Image (cartoon, rainbow, N blue to C red; front, side, top):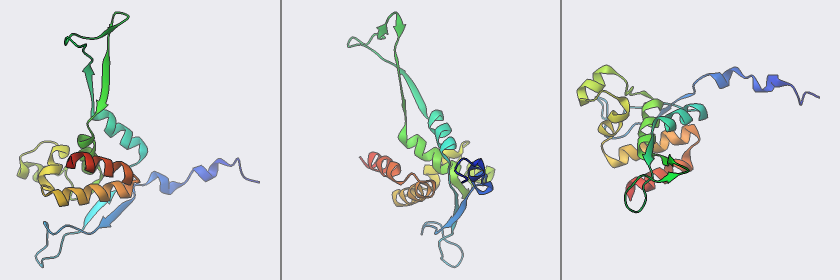
Length: 154
């Protein structure tokens, strides 16, 4: 019957990055005035988890008087992730062209990290929203990205 055959889960194409060319934005046009197409790599769930973990902050929980909150003699901490930092990290990881890890591009904008370069290259809100939406769409994160965009707008 084949229902217990693991070969259905061993598909070579799932090990490969899927790179999609998307239309560019009006901010970045070629010599003919046409928006430069961009290339985006879809991000898998394992990579997304790693990106989120890298964007976590751990804070000490304090009581009403501003002192560390203790439970059974242990200082309590809360962990949260910075959604705008996750969005920037996701874009930096997914963009194949332009490559935000490129040394020349980083030097031009005076940055050392691709994640910090995202908002400098996509400085216009509509450009940032567009690339964020496309990266999320191609990685299957559309609903989550809309929440992030709404949070940034507020």
